[in-house]
Length: 335
Ligand code: SF4
Ligand code: MG
Image: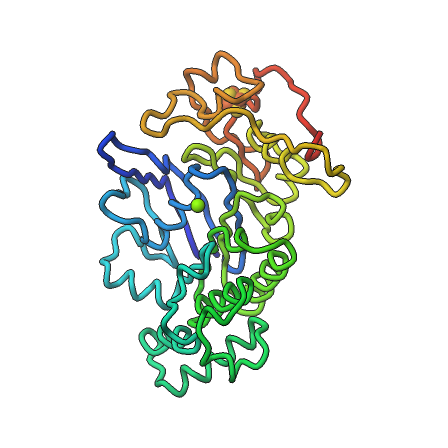
């Protein structure tokens, strides 16, 4: 069963210089209990997609131009702000990159967890406090009874991110969106936080959308991956298919830039040369054409549709056309 169905979503921002087409027709589903990663470089539209699902894009300048976002059967594009606020507080949770900016520095941790429970779940203060203690325990914070009275600055970066997860999950949301949740943390803490999110989603049955630019994080955490480029889906696959059978040249480039265990310290990662296209005036053909080593004549004028590779795998590239020349695709990250 799908908890979320995003269909042909288009989101633009109007600026003094014109309209930025940030999300240009994105379609995907999320099953109940599934962890889906959305990856891509900054500016590819992954965060805007996530914010649109939660209806958190500032409007103006943001506008949902087209498409639908069915969450548990309701099209959130059509809901009133009031209805949406209720859903955000009880059925969706969000975790951001920097917990310091999303926590209130002047309010105790316990009050911040309890706030949503009183407002959206009808709990009284005592019940909410009890639940706050339970949640802190669940996310691995020791001495939760003592720590609920402390303030954000008394917690380390990793502990603050655990608190954010506690807040996001306190209302038992059906969907948790995590936008670069571990980017600001060091590698060991990153792994612990991802492990925790996965465990909690298993325990509580929440579906997760994980937004990241880091394919290393994806391999350990997600079941499926969407690769976004220039506001569109370039490739969509299971994690295994993406790591071992990727079919889009942009994904090959991303995979080459993942550090490998056997990599020598002085070996440079190979980021993809060039920059993404200008989304004020997106190219009429394939968005990746200017950076693609395999670009053909057809790619300049014609934007490829997503072509099925398997039941769970699609990629938008003319190389998948039966008439295209065969290229030797890299067989593994770094190949
Ligand atoms: Fe490269 Fe053409 Fe495929 Fe685009 S459609 S990724 S330009 S080969
Ligand atoms: Mg972002």
